[in-house]
Length: 172
Image (cartoon, rainbow, N blue to C red; front, side):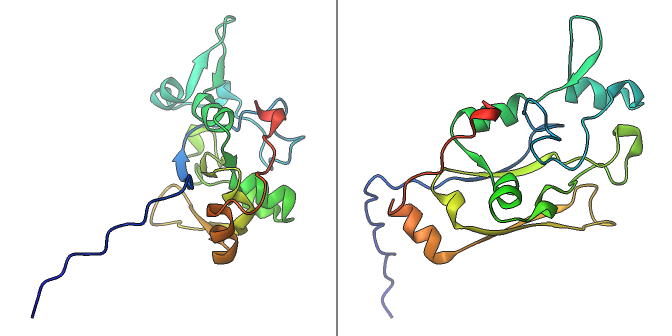
């Protein structure tokens, strides 16, 4: 029996895919998250008792109060990526995609929040069919996120057959 090498990968012709998941912030970076469809109000950090959590999840404001650190979420958006849950909620009519992913078992950290997010590039987001928050109570203090993509839509996105979704200007 002869050992064979795997086939050489075909050269990509400028196609690039991005699907990135991150537990990246304590609130989406939007002027008014609730007005933009979020289902959970921002954390009132004055009520959170876990000091270590406050330290690594917030920034100090000039008046001494704390604000959720949204830097990583902002970096994803300003680099042109899309939050698939927001796309599913607004474009596909799936508001449950914006359900809380963390904090269910830790009320001392501010209670349930949507801090785990999946991002795609501006073409692949069109291939999203559904985004589901999976209850993992008893396994993790963060719920899972399932992103269902259309195989055909993904292939079309990689071949750049459709224009990209516009940037979310409100979040920039």
